[in-house]
Length: 302
Image (cartoon, rainbow, N blue to C red):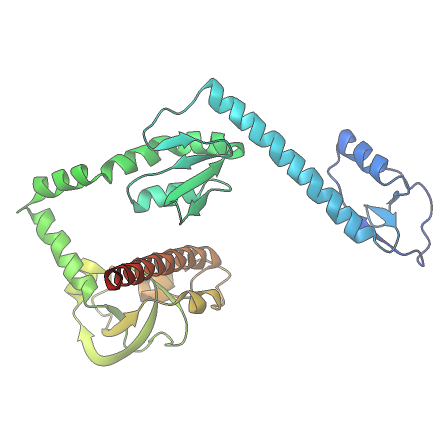
């Protein structure tokens, strides 16, 4: 622990900051801020001056950028020494680039990698070299999901189950989803002005006409129910990006009672996933609209 260099009068203008307790960081901080003093009461460093806060912020940002650059260099060296060989991965100068067929499993795995980003313009994921070890740990699942998402693999699976009970169940589930309905307790209908978490994702409920939901359909396509539970069908819609951004999240994940009820207020993590999906869909629509407009213009030309 640093000793207080001197008593700091309460009238002195300045700013405080906490630092990692390693010798090198403290030495560099003292070299940059020679007037800095340790405040034993606040357990923090005090830098005097009207612009101290800005100068400290700028120094911390430079330190973070330097640390990121060092971590990227270490990751780049690790990749060069033991690279991931895959048709889905490309090593660019600044980042690693992942381009694969779509897969929910794959998207979930990549989103767990620190600093991974979706590049909507190039239709690929970027991962900085500093996250290479995280990427390596998850790569077997990512690559397997990508291979399952290939058109030929999808067609082969569909051909293999064609005419089977699994095929019938899959088609029945798709038909049910297209009806855009969901079972809610007769005596506990969710609010219609709030994003709601359900077993099929985050939705906005529109209303209900009072039609009762049969327990067999609920258990087959949505969630388990008790024999004495009574549910009604409620219609739903997807929320817009603006609606999802302004939704106030729950502090805790849904409890067993809420999951049995069938709906709950979503957490911030769940809302972030829904916002990413909504943002991606919006960009896809904008690209399609732009392509359509461009095509219309070209046909009107000479």
